[in-house]
Structure formats: C-alpha cells, structure tokens
Length: 145
Image 1 (tube, helix red, strand yellow):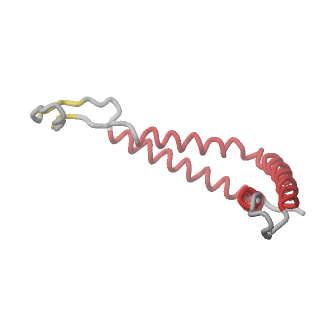
Image 2 (cartoon, rainbow, N blue to C red):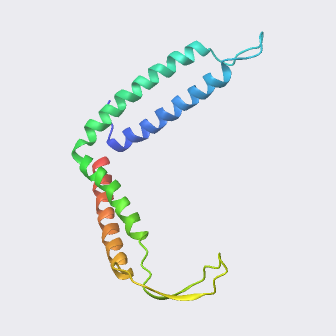
Image 3 (tube, one colour):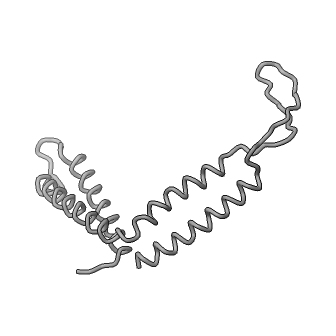
C-alpha cells in the first residue's frame, strides 16, 4: 500500500494514540479485585502493544526515508522558529525610561537606555524570517502531498 507523506504522518499519530490507549488500559486494568471480571485480556493487549510499537518503529523509518529530500527544510523550519523567538525577545528599550523599582524604597528615577539592535531592525528581521518560514511551510506541504 502506498500513501503520501501527509497520510503517513496522520497514521503515525493514530498509531501513537493506539499505543497510549493500550498502555493506559494495561496499566489500569492489570490489578483488579480477586474474582472480578476483566474487560479485556491483559496478555493479549500486552502482545498487541508490542506489535503496534514495532509497527510504529517501521513506520517512522519509512517516513524518515520518504522525507529525506525535504529533511533540510524541515530542520531549517525549527531553526528559523528559534531565530524568530530570539529576535522577538531582544530588549530594544532605547532612550529615557522611568525606573519604577520600589523594592528598596527608591523613588522613581530616570534612566537612559542604549540598545544596539533597535526595534526597527527586530521587526524587519522578524518579518524576513516569517516570510522565509512561510516559503518553507509551502514547500514542505507540497512535498507532503
């Protein structure tokens, strides 16, 4: 059976969810009051869980092989997101600001802040990174389809 990468990723997600359900059922249903009825066979569920986990490993290998041509772009998306966060968290305060730190009974004082990287630069770089991310997402989406 041949499926596209997008379908494979959805299948991976559903497989992980199935493993999670089996795991929770085994963990919570293993020990019951003596003489009680179990809703399912623990040993069969354990066996099924192991088979599904091996299926997931094989599926991940196939997905990795299938995504090899686009892998650089996928990794680049992660780095570009980090770069965007980096720029968005730079303190760009510049000029006179009022220091209102009253922790030690200090009266407000005026401070002059100096920023090397200014707000305009941060905004320009953020927009540039976001545009690049949009291009990468489009390229990855087209590849996945």
